[in-house]
Length: 170
Image (cartoon, rainbow, N blue to C red; front, side):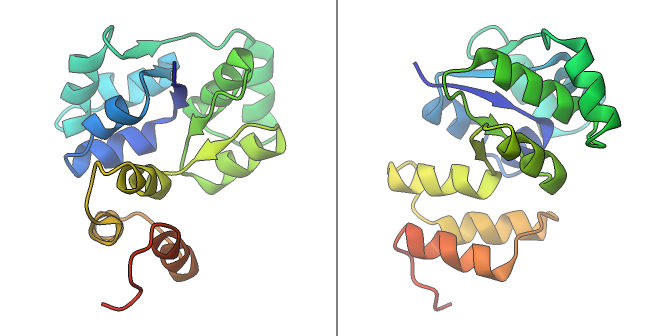
C-alpha cells in the first residue's frame, strides 16, 4: 500500500488546479496531521481544497496526531517551522518505513530531508503522474503552478521537463 503524509501546500495547489484526485491515483492513503486539517478545512473556507479534503476524509485521506508533542515543539522552536510542517514531519517519522512527505516550503523540506525523510514537492507529483500516463503534459501543470504563485526556479523547471521527456522548447 502506498502511504504518504502531506503538508497543506501540495493539497492546496492540487485542489486549486483541479488535480486533487491525482493524489488518490498516486497514493492509496494520504495522512494529514490535525494542524494541516485545520489549515485546509477549518480555515480553508472558500478554497477548493476544503471540499476536496472533506469528500476524501475517511476514504483515502486520514488525520493522524503527531505522537511526540515534544518533537513538534522542538521543530517549531529550533527549526522555525510552522505547526503544520512540524506535525507532518513528526507523523512521517513515526510511520517510518520510508513513508514520503508531500511538502513544498523550503525550510520544511530541508528539515525533513536532514531527518532522512523522502520529500515530494508538488511539481514532482505532476512528474510522477506524467510518467504513469495520468496527465499528458507536465509543462502545462508547472506553468499553471507558477501562475498561481508557486515558486519554481528555471533550472528545476527544466530539469523536471527533461526527466519526463518533454521538450524544453516552448
